[in-house]
Image 1 (cartoon, rainbow, N blue to C red):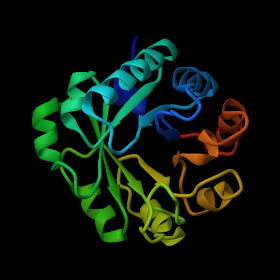
Image 2 (image 1 turned 45 degrees about the vertical axis):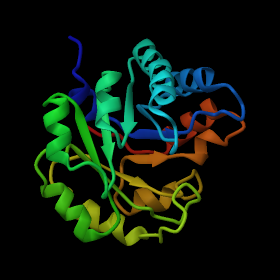
Image 3 (image 1 turned 135 degrees about the horizontal axis):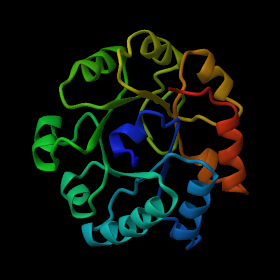
Length: 216
């Protein structure tokens, strides 16, 4: 029986954010390789893209996700998510309100929320319509310039207050820091440079997954 995106997402452990890889021109080959290596979810995250350009890239990502039986996510924009029939929409603290996004996209789309403090984490866990939560940044990261690190303490809080919803550690996580993240209670992570800047992204994916505990 085919799983719904929501059912499939419940066991997701490795969530990758990537830009369009314009510098290397290998977006399609890259997403194919890391999906094949085991990445569960890929989110296209590149600020400043025109909607048409973003949709074109997301169509490539969608096709790759379908080929590999994986999931893909749209960042911020419910209208773009609707245009490409995305299974996942991710919203930041200052993005479209979750009830509005839910009204636009319906009940089947998985909606996530970024959080940067214990208070935001608890609020997101209690918020109707939120399906998963990201907690971080654990360490400072160039993908979010100017945002202070929330530290491992936020992950420890999340591990003790997660209720039944999935949550992901995010922010500066790489293979060297992964044991610290897991020790704090995280079983799911969002990564960027640990895979996107790796000499062999597929090998980096497999190594990260090898160090993550299973989820059920």
